[in-house]
Length: 311
Image (cartoon, rainbow, N blue to C red):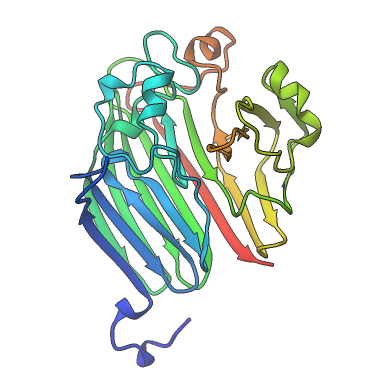
């Protein structure tokens, strides 16, 4: 680290700038741009559950941005099906899915739930000698989420810590998935994936047809369908791009890990998705006995790290 004696102001090596977007689809929405010396720069979106938008590491863009571009606040009551959720999705480095549903629309709840449509309140910024940190509270009934996001100085490390509390008087399903979205030039030729999974299982027949090449970028092709895999038992997943000389590792406290490949031209994306549930919807998880629940007043803690380094 740099000696404080050699800094006239901390802004020289780390800044967190709060703003309101002035134009485009996100006009009127809040943003926080965090830039750190020798680390990962991130754009936080307080009106989208304090999720993470664009992100850069030493000049390399990490995040996949959807064809919609950055989107602003959206009413949770609008996210009733797969189409509506997709139309309101910006992509970005990390989108939170849940807490009412993860995966396909089920029981009257849309694709991936409503969390990302919720507003973050009590937003606080903190700067230390080692990191920039933002904390906030997000209410996604019946849950209250206390979120903490930090990006480190002198190290390519972003960490998300969530504390979820069931504020209701009934036991509630609490599925959660961190949708970590990576794109070109990181997910491109000369890139490959590794995990410590016990096995990689395709979600359906389409994924089964591409199981042999889950670990490498497929050719971009018009109308190519998405492919989804579960990395059973995985605790980490790593994307390495030897041409760029960059490696990104995703870890989480959550017990399951999914992978989403979208090879279609104009969309071309990779998502690495730590979760506590499946991606088949709440109805499926409840029926199979694999849905996580929280009792009244019960607390669920989870963390996610995204680490980048040069190789």
